Image (tube, rainbow, N blue to C red; front, side):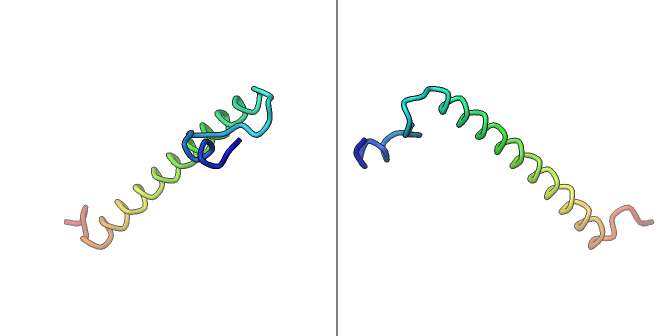
Length: 59
């Protein structure tokens, strides 16, 4: 496969086995789940830090 075709596609299969595509999709979904989880925890941390710094919730 030429370099231009490889760069033009979203993904390139090096092997002729289509199971590699299924493995790539599974890996991408797992990575996306990890990214979403990390974003959730970053948001929680930022909200907690903002409340701490602003004194929110105190009377």
